[in-house]
Length: 482
Ligand code: PNW
Image (cartoon, rainbow, N blue to C red; front, side, top):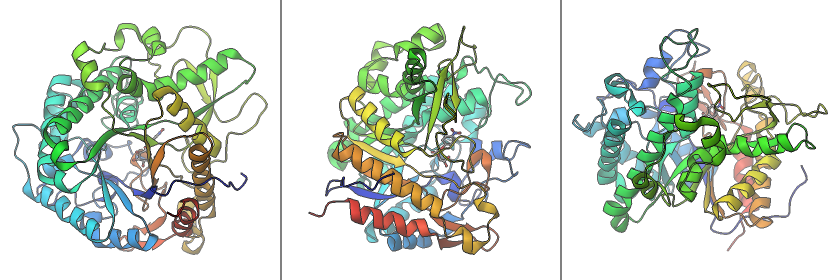
């Protein structure tokens, strides 16, 4: 991609992102109890390399090392998530609060501030207390889940809210709903596919879970705004994942329409209720009464509930419409995701993740699409990054010279600058995924996303990769000086 003359505004801030279960380890220390990811990852066959987050990057014991590398890289922002089962180990509103869990995060936040790094806190990044799944099915039970989640966030706002200015209610509700309750690739692993799991109904559960997460998000924001925002002065929003869509046949109106449908099923499922107060028509049409309707009370909680749009973005696909009636288990909008178009053009090079093919122009196009549909909201990029095919098998001296990742960031940050400078997109913050290699969910430790190498065999030693310095140089260049 050509080098761009576009620049980012002077108040633009950047940093890195991680998530509790992927980095913390210390799975049974200081009162923490299992999350659904502890249980899932310890079930045979669920994680490709048979690993789990028991130790991970051991960040629970190495907060100083993590802050030191953030500082070394010049990051001004750190997005991390709180582990609900550290704070309320059993999870529920009548269960005890674990002061040690709160103290850990309180100290960590103080240390970040002391290092000149702004905390950007995700309240839920998939590690639901396992007890709540066992008790009532977690988000499958909307009323119980909303009551317990909002109790948890209130505890957090009360004890940490005076020192945090940016909150994310949920990370990627699409993943919890679809990967967790339809495909079964993520915890709790529910699916209609009986070869993978004994229980689950992928035709209904993802839509129920999505509904619960939306209502929980809207209620949490309402609580924050009514009880805390005035004094604490922070902002709150949800983070949605969404990758770009290009038509498989650019001449076929049905493929073009399928691209919009793909974005609606992945993104607008959550973003339309938040910005427009209703589900997309394409989803209502395909899913009928399997999509639980939003009551007027729910709409009034959810509509207008984002202070910013949290955008996680990695890649793009070619989209081809399917003929005939959609499968009852379909969650994508009756279409196929492909890596090549009709003419054999590739969307982007392979990485170590089956789903991830870099396509930087898609980042710019999606920011424009979101801005036009939702009235130019303030966008914070809460994740962006890549794995590298075969990275885990390289000798250390080659591994740390991660030119593929460096180029990914050059291209994606450039595309973001074009979106800001040329398309008028209101993007203000950017957090690269990830600060360091970590537990990549069902891919275990084989797929590395870090700008820092973590040596899992040598006391979780952190070693900067080339990309860590490239990202810093990029923002030095792109952010306009006052
Ligand atoms: C996001 N997929 O997850 C998460 O927010 C991170 O925790 C994660 O490490 C990162 O992206 C990289 O994967 C996803 O299979 C995981 O389509 C899987 C998928 C999408 C997003």
